Length: 602
Image 1 (cartoon, rainbow, N blue to C red):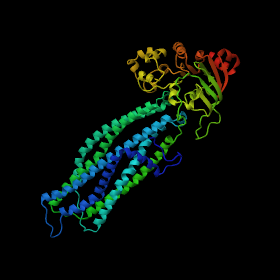
Image 2: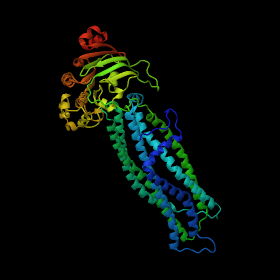
Image 3: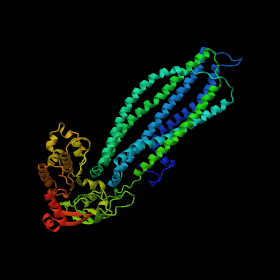
Image 4: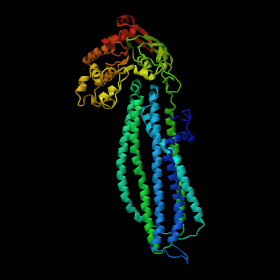
């Protein structure tokens, strides 16, 4: 089930009620959550009422007063004193169990929110990424989801735990306020402080190790996210949304395991210290009782006062945490409520065989502006009418900003036209299965993106239902086999983040090899030879001539040497088609084409 924010206006600042729908995410873990609340209530009762009440009832037995009071022997004193560390034991165990279980539930909620926000990002159009920085999105998916989780836990846990503690302390305080008074006893529990050094050092060392492991997992998780955000075009063109969600989910699960280990060691120290301190207090009280020192009744009152003050202080901090969570919720809602724009049709049309005939009818396209619902004044494409036949190789040429890349982006639905229709084999693209459409298109952008994985895995990501050849054949066709074979691990060689372990020309050829391997009936080539030297460019042209046979090919030509493969040239300027024909037809008749051609020939 996809997470939906209850408010539809992302600009409206959410209130505390906005957190209520997210409590439903605790439903699959209701047993753990109920257990956490029960242990929280036990902690509250043992802290707020139990400690003052036991102090009031046990101490008078140990330090009897009055003429008719009988002295206790050592065994009886020991039994009475045993109740004191027992209460702290119950308090400590319930505190640890409460903290561990509530953090377990919280991490599960966090994991689910994080994955669903990430899944939502996979379905958003490219215009969304043009308006949002990847670092900001990374912060929202990691930091803001964590802050929201903290707010949810503060409400669900401490609003039970702290009020129970407070009410218990108040009740104990009222009961003891009317009782007898006595004098204060100087506590000797400071002897327990040296004993606390041992668990602090031991647990601290373990916690440091687990924290370092957690940071590594957090880095891995951020790396996967950052890499995905850096390549939204490839993810969509290669239908890798599910693949990326699966990869992210695996890393998130590893992060969860590491995080829970940190939680375990970070929360076990406090109850251990309290238990040791309680034993020290018991020893001091036992020694005092042996010397017949009587305690004043003011001690239980002081304890009750302290226990009633502490919850108030914590509830104040909860309020601040909720405010921070609401601010994070607002940022997350901007993603969760963002318009997906490019949607899968409710009943998609499936083509049995894709011929590759493309038609654009009266197509106009405006890029959305920075303001919601407002388009740029000047259209990127204006009234485009174009028909590309099956197997035709068409080159798009024109000055920068002419609309060439925008037109190509309409073909695989990276964005939809503002008006007009784009058809494949006579069917409107918006009626076709988005997965089948993008699988039918092999795209090689001018700036290709490859994942931080092996060469073999990167090529395999291009696999489609049209794939027929092998990875080696694809690498050979792209003139990439020689440098791949020279690498230490050959096709198993990792290429680094964004392909930083290979040269620009090698990276371009690997992207071209992926297109060979995909073997789709439609090719989109955004100057696929731009990073190649002259010698390799000629070899690639020969391979591309073979690749384009029988395939509908749209080439965005920045270097005119590449248009010799085209049997038709479309000249664009200012979002319009200004001329259409062959080189021999366009050179004498089209001033824009002639100028562009002559400038590169000089």
